[in-house]
View 1 (cartoon, rainbow, N blue to C red):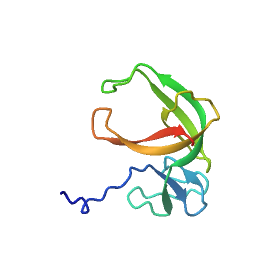
View 2: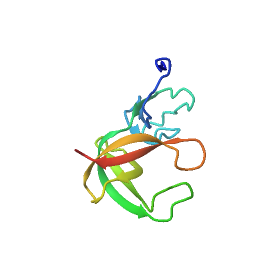
View 3: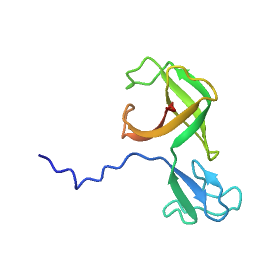
View 4: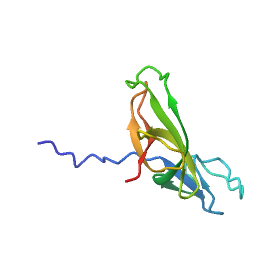
Length: 129
């Protein structure tokens, strides 16, 4: 039996940012807060709080991509832009049969290795249950 306890299996995350000086939320993070002009240190994220961006969201718009790059084993890919309850917007893969603008979704993050190169964390939006 193999002991996996020494490995730290964390679920993939995509981080959003909050300026600690004024409370403005960002995804992705800018170098300087647009509201209070607080500078973010890209190494330490000083003066900025990070949090995982996931959970309930609403579909703003979507499209179907037919001409996928090499490495994808699907005929097409659904791609959407959503808005989270906190007002932040993000784009990612849509996993629903009949997307409708305004429908409630749930955002999750997966590690994707479908494209060449190292795996990257991507959003996957699914229908809310």
